[in-house]
Image (tube, rainbow, N blue to C red; front, side, top):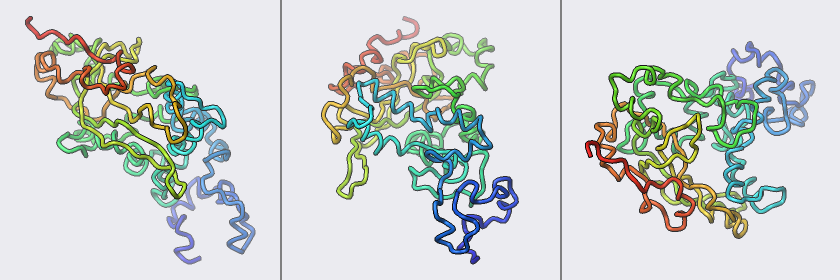
Length: 363
């Protein structure tokens, strides 16, 4: 074969690897006995880990089974958010059509993390046909999670420094997010429900056990999320509208994102997250997001806030709000107030808006 004809397996080391020794047809189908190229590729499966194909399960059953219910595969986060606002996702519904055209683009198979870039960003092999045990931060993680998380973490938002875990430690996404990526084996509605989700205290136990030299930690560990003191400005996305363009291709139109920092009441308060105050981010949705597909597809739009629990990836040791007690207590601009809420979203966000501010220290 000419070099260009075997580009997908151009690395000789791949042929000696475990996956290389398995043989092409075991995963991709086709007929290895045929000499004619077209006949040999009959029934070819481009991504054996996608859809109804369960090739990965043959050798990686434990991981594949939990992945099937993970947020990356099942998109439980999208579904729960739409249904919480009264959306009907039953087969044949208008919202189900919108979900298929737009939300399903984010579905990710095993191969789209460990071999190629995700389909959402037009695919493409990352390292030839090499299987990467650890997905690439650049070509896999940030390829999909780049506009907010990636830009925050790598310091790509103008005037906002990169996350200290990147600048000081060059930590990759998988250094924190490992077990949770494949899911727990149980369906979850949000990433915060995953029992394997990473927490700051997983690495920073000393913060909880040694507060003697840090009165702010001693005072606030139980009522403020870490990001309230250690995050800075982050991107907020407002109205997003989905439709189909004249060529029949799904498309989106959205308003420009806005850099903000907003502290509000915790909408996910629980024993795992007991904080009264947390950082909130506006999600890219509005009552008319799916109007192209039908009227009033979210009859209970106000049942949940559009300013939601957030964990921005731009952590700093020192921030403007933790310079002193009054840097936060006296600074009402840091808090989500009625003036920050759009008129048509006031009802949805009444539970997270701050109306009474922490007293100025000394008063």
